[in-house]
Image 1: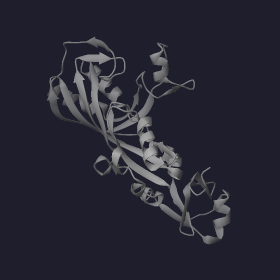
Image 2: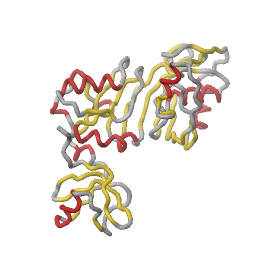
Image 3: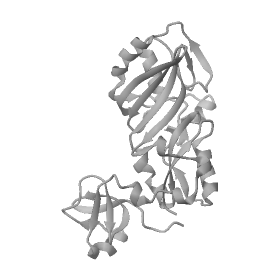
Image 4: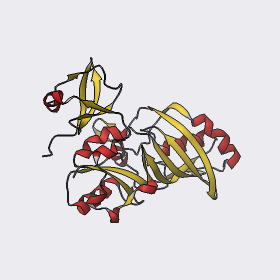
Amino acid sequence: MNGIINAYKPSGISSAAAVGKIRHALGYRHVGHMGTLDPIGEGVLLVGIGKGARLFDYYLGKSKTYEATFKFGISSDTLDIAGNITDSTNSIPDASSISAALNSLVGKQEQLPPLYSAKSVGGVRAYELARKGIAVELKSSVITVNSFELLKEIGENEYLFRIDCSAGTYIRSLCRDLAEKLGSLAVMTSIKRTRCGKFFAENSIKLGDITPDIVVPLETALSDIERYDAPESAYKKIVNGVPYPADDAPKGEFALYCRNELIGLATVVDGAVKIKTYLKGDLK
């Protein structure tokens, strides 16, 4: 059983708990998600099955789309509504002011992650240190926001947004940064991941409907990446991890096949095809 499941994580459970449910539904232990979604979040949670779990780095780096709601006038220690309220303000922006400020947060930029995040600080998750009251200094990361749209007002001082962004973007931080630009405060009240790479929420599977026959084969899951077929004579070298000299291989990362068999993800290094993610070997 090797492949990817486009699972729909409901709000209220952790990504790890969702993986546990999938593992139980499949009766299979080689299962892992491809990027955490906040406990209050819902939507696309890509899950690798068997050798598919080796694609963690590949899918973690994919761009994503979210729909999120921000409530203006308050702040919290976690930057979302699940945290402890730390401050409030009567300075509340209107819809036109919010719309006008969004373009300033589109494009390549540095973003400071939330203190309550999965960022590693000395080998420990930042949220674990924050819960213990240990002060940490997080470093900014370079992200790209492709688009940031105000969709509608859904309640008092609360608005729904759609954000298309690069991997590593924290929507809670965008909420904080938008409020700061408007001279206000805000917390994220909900978040839904509607897309990860080529996988969309409307095609995702609820946790209660997970069965072995809905696992997307690796060949299908990787159909959006360029394919390169090495000659059959190179098969023995390739499956043993020996770089294969090739001047006709694609640039960048590609799916490496030989004998019509998916071997893994590869790149060209010093004129030779080198495997980055091996997808053929047996699981132990």
